[in-house]
Amino acid sequence: MLKPWTFISQSLLVETRIFRLLAERWRSPRTGDEHVFSNVDSPDWVNVVALDSEGQMLLIRQFRFGTRAFTL
Image (cartoon, rainbow, N blue to C red; front, side, top):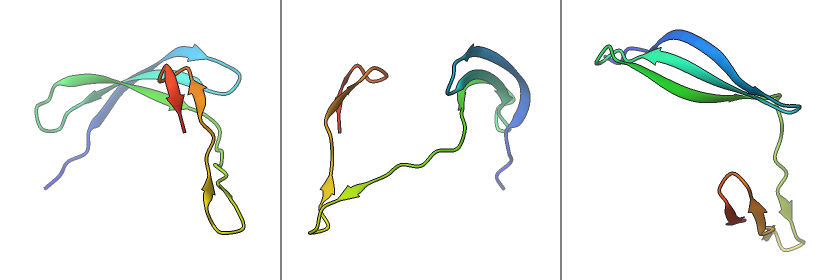
């Protein structure tokens, strides 16, 4: 049977106008080892997908700083 991870602690790494970056420490239920994960805390948002009159999805290629590359 699967067991949930155990939350240990949380610390604020960065706070900006639109999100907070948190470091969270969790304990594995399988090994008991502690691991740190990053959590981006932000307000709810929506993504809008543009379709043309034929139902084709419209995509924009743009540079994204997180990936350091151009993506759709």
